[in-house]
Structures are given as structure tokens and as C-alpha cells.
Image (cartoon, rainbow, N blue to C red):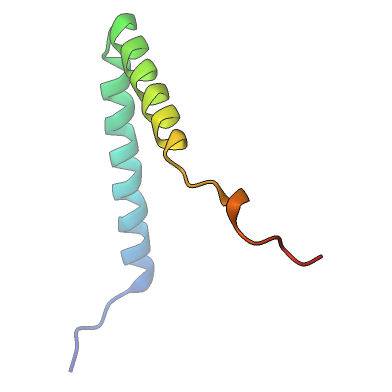
Length: 66
């Protein structure tokens, strides 16, 4: 027979771990210099633009019925 699990405790632990991860990211972000934050923001923007440029255009497909 399987182990009995308290789902409320599991959910609370999962939420606590998610908050801890978010807090760690916030601490790492606030520990960066302004130049580092700006560089990271520019790189993220560049990656987003590059990814958007690689999207397939759906306009060549068959027209949709109205």
C-alpha cells in the first residue's frame, strides 16, 4: 500500500519553495550594478526580437472560413 500524503502540506511546501526561488532571484537581481541590469535587459530584448523574427508567418496558409 502506498504512503499516505497530506495534500495540504504538500501544496504549502511547494508554494514555500516557489516563493524561496522567487526571493533568491530578487536578491540576485538587486545585487547587480546598473550597468549589469541594463546589459541583461538589452540581451533579453535582443533575444525576444530574434525569436519573434524566426516565427512562421501564418498569412501564407489557406484563408479561414467566416
